[in-house]
Image (tube, rainbow, N blue to C red; front, top):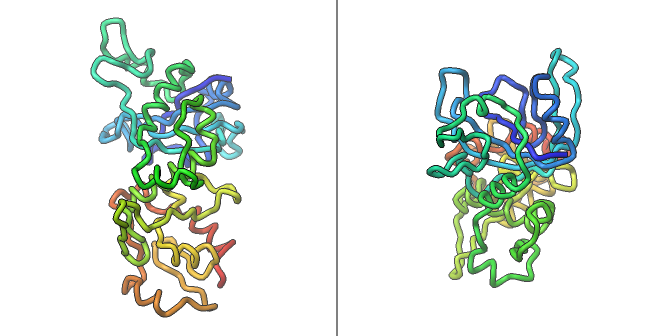
Length: 294
């Protein structure tokens, strides 16, 4: 087993869904096999939609655990790595800060960038460098209101613990997921537009999983949505759902009229400005098929 870096972007020609699977050519099967059963980093390159494109963050943005590798049944000489425990960072970690390279193999002896090393989409990384990047990615400490509720299951354990132990801690993961979803939606309910914050700075809005963790739903913003407590209750019980165009669906079993009056006139969601954080169609489809009371 070994830690590795998987390079991916939304514009890739491969069949990637980072929180679920990573698609790669046979060229990298040895490195991928080494990473099987261990943690990897996801890296977004500068070129995100073809050779002439640019605009990528050139940063590590998430980590995940490689559960297994299988040959692609439809495309010769290609494979899938299947992932679990996917987790986005609080902030992307750039590959270089000044003259410091987080991946030492990306630096030449003269301090310039080794473009040949960058050309490898899957590459092994020493554990100490992996841990340094993950630690740099999770930088946000609890807000004052979180510290006031230290007994809550939503508050992470911030004492010194090995980074991998923290990555699998449900308490740590819940807190990070909640933080990321609230931030993506600017602490605003996607259904009602309500933005309520108490005197201590605690937002009322909750982070709801679209596909629950206990049903193999990942802790990614794309599997989350910010909802007030009442709307969260309706969503979890299937009285409302969301179609692929991000419009609300109302169950014929009934939604309180007081709630419908708070919805947007066109029943559309108030979505994050960053489209990368919009609810993903695969999780929305799961909710409609398994939770929504039609």
